[in-house]
Length: 174
Ligand SMILES: [Zn+2]
Image 1 (cartoon, rainbow, N blue to C red):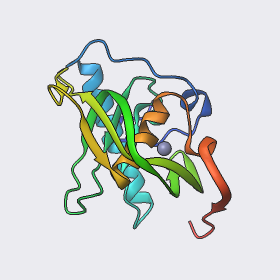
Image 2: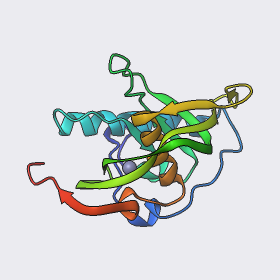
Image 3: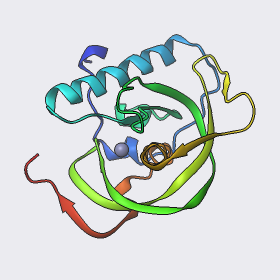
Image 4: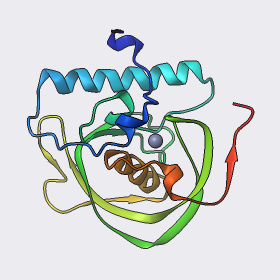
């Protein structure tokens, strides 16, 4: 077994294709270990792929089928902090749809066009089990909404290649 520091992105489809279970117990050592593993996996990916910024990761991508994701809000490029979301829940979308290229750390060199809502409403829980926001929902727009939908799909065993429309492109330079 490798250590947490050597965590890498899972490419084993059996894990990626399983629906993930809800987190029932918050604030546990297991969850802390999972968070560290995900952070190291993203860091190691960026180290090994110079110039690429990891914007989201879901627990199944490190081999754990729990409903945990971490995301960066790319609508604010100055802010590269990660937000961990436990049991993130998609409520609804609005303002129509956009088509854009999407890749996935678990699908090396793959880029497909995927239709996503322009805006999505959702909520999640912190590692301590606190609902965010306390009441109501968060509004995610444009790229941030896309990232959230992509990561939420991972928790249901869905990959962006499942939803690709039109011509699929592979990045041969990668
Ligand atoms: Zn992905």
